[in-house]
Image (cartoon, rainbow, N blue to C red; front, side, top):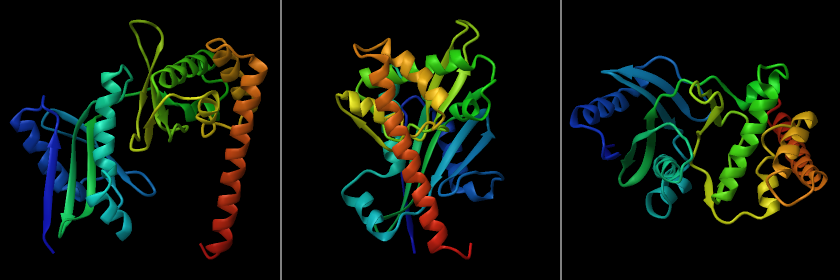
Length: 256
């Protein structure tokens, strides 16, 4: 079965870098490392390039057809959304390229390549360690960052604990936030409910939701009580859905 490779690169890559990235992607499986239950992410350094390469799981047949003819692939969307975010002033690791491999014009496997970013933590560290240095400061700055997303009409549907990289800016003393896992986004004017629901996948720790609600209420013309009630309600609903889904999977796949 013959694979046809389709490539799109950022304009600022020279020919040598393009050829290097193409070679790395073609031999992706030979590199050590990788993490992810569905998709595989590897940090590969070669020829003065420090790359993060995300290999998306081969979709089932219906989605393969959809991504081939009706929708853009996850790799394509990740690449285009990354460029769009940077254009409107939202940080994300610099996008370099995406690759799509097809069999008989039906999408097989796709890759998204970005520059590797050395970061200090993700939101998950704040959940796991309430005594993390600058915990309250980071949480409040993260809330203001999320407000900025909302004001710019960015509904990041995978706004979860591991999908924002956090790095302390030594020049300003503040923290910079970088979005990752970008293939699910909507761009539209966001209602208050849209905004509060966007916090739902982050944490079910009530004390953290209280801090975020307090900070967000300073940025909108709504009371802190209203913001907290909405934010907490969506967080609890999300947590309950997750617990039910896990319980259902355990019943269905009881042998695992």
